[in-house]
Image (tube, rainbow, N blue to C red; front, side, top):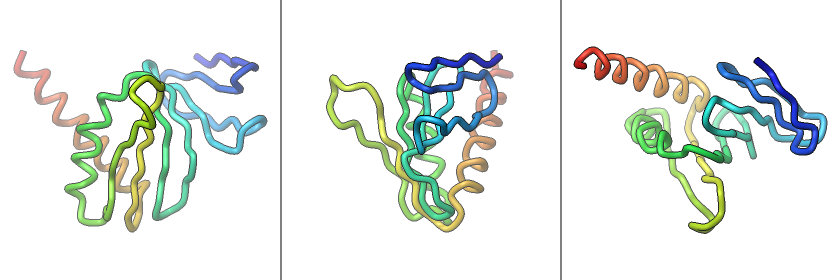
Length: 116
């Protein structure tokens, strides 16, 4: 399901990111409980801004740090009262490493779910 908010120029979707660059150069998308926007997106470096539920970033960051091809993965909040956390990832092939980390976490969560 897609919905467009013209004031913020953001597409909302449930599963996959959609490109919307009419008003912003950054790619913005909404994944059920958080808004994600790319500040910078290159093959060897990603910088994202996450608004909403950012606690998921801790296990993602830990998986990325364990990856041999990633040289840096970290988060930064400008101020505790400001919304949004910046995620910075640097490495050889950031997109492949990010997808791998997400798939590994997905498998671990499925295994956890089988215990109950």
